[in-house]
Length: 112
Image (cartoon, rainbow, N blue to C red):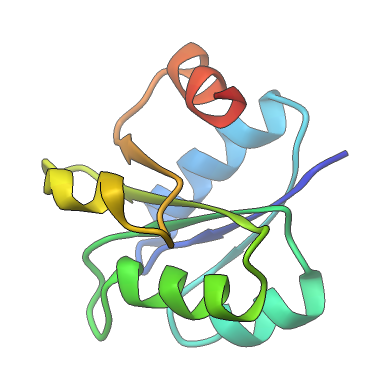
């Protein structure tokens, strides 16, 4: 079973995404931006989904640090706002997730 770490400063948004991922058969842990990097080191997820806009840091910066430590981790940037297309070409962002998202659309993004 693949492991996923969801990073978001909103408890509600973390819960929604966690539930979708569990329904797709993933093992999931969630985190706010403050403990994300430490949890990433101990949990060792296969996939990380980080929200773009958080109170103290942006998700792209967290994903960049994760990719620098373990390049094979699949990293997805999520947002309820439109994400700049430049993130599609970042080497530390493997895909973009526009929330809210349907179960089927999430499955398709993670399986591409």
